[in-house]
Image (cartoon, rainbow, N blue to C red; front, side):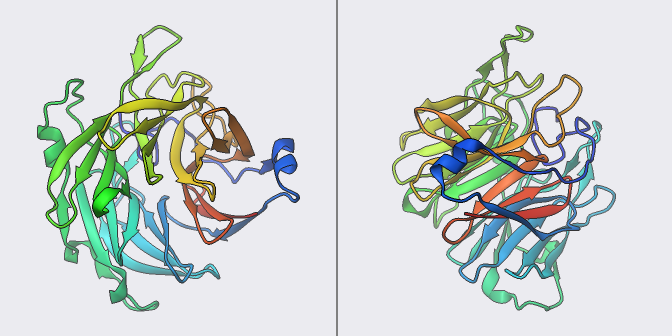
Length: 340
């Protein structure tokens, strides 16, 4: 369980109030005006995955409380109205106090693909079936595919004997590529057949503190830029400073370093220039992650530029239409909207 990055990161972080966003001088040089940051939705229960549709709606996974099976899929309109679409997903508390359940989701050709870390399942939901205000259906009614069993049974060279299917994207041929945050691997699901294979493994990173010499990479996000995949990582305990890495994975599954020197990355998106934007979860103090120490970062092979700092434990990033972005602050139960 300890390798998992799921949204509540065991008991390492105290719940806290929303942070104050600070705009760096560097972004002011790159933009003629500072971004406008607002709260689109609040009072969510562990929001993590965010996907937008053509109408500008957000589809959000909520992991729940861990006290009962109250994980759910929620639709949020551009005006901030919330509708429960699917309810009753498993939500559990780990021995360390973390809450596990729904992770990220992907909208592809009218179908939402939702990853459930505890169950190792890939749930599927056709969004054409839903009308806002309709009574929610139960998770048990959804079709699903078992991904976790394949991962657990696979003999990795560096085998953790764990699975936590966490994030996903669409690649060549419409195949779905899934990062497993416990197995430190990228799983390929073939379009049409659903056949699974291990596409790539993500190597551990050095630990400057020396004990242990290396820590788990913990992949948390993946995007495809048309030529290569980019995978962001969180790094495992003791969360060495500035060791989180963005890896580039080519179509043959070969892995190289795209950029490093980052802190505890939780998600990745492509900007209008096809360069990655990542969110840093926060700064590890030795006892927990510091409140309001998260950031939105633009990364290129040459440098990392922190565009926004002062975010409170950001866990996911989604690009909307144009220069609009959404960030889920899981502990606060809010979705922030950023307009450039």
